[in-house]
Image (tube, rainbow, N blue to C red; front, side):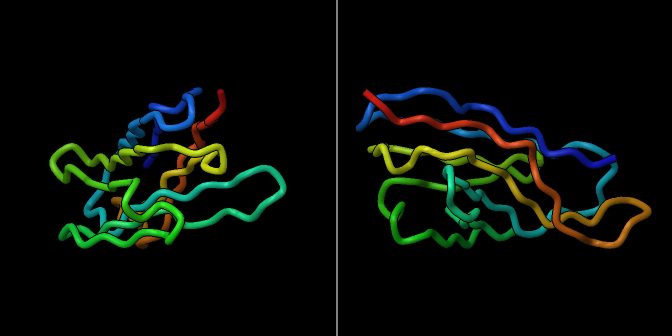
Amino acid sequence: QVQLVESGGGLVQPGGSLRLSCAASGAMIRINDMGWYRQAPGKQRELVAGITRGGSTNYADPVKGRFTISRDNARNTVYLQMNSLKPEDTAVYYCNAAIWAVGSSPRNYWGQGTQVTVSS
């Protein structure tokens, strides 16, 4: 069974940094696009950043220049380096990956979410 497990969330002061990690495990044939989403209280879940298997990236406008997404295909892991954090970055951050698992059709998988709180 394929799972995505996130880590690295927490409480940080404005201007600080955090690094999120998300590791995929299970019997997989291939991982294609990976990404990070976030959902703040009372708001819809939104895309933060995405990365293709080949390393092409895209970012939501509010995080451009502050966040960096990367991946390690050998470790089936995607990262989100978050710098210059602002209170409005406070949200639950979710990892998403398009995975072709053994014995299954390719589909999207979600992690359980990790809380990021930016506050003084």
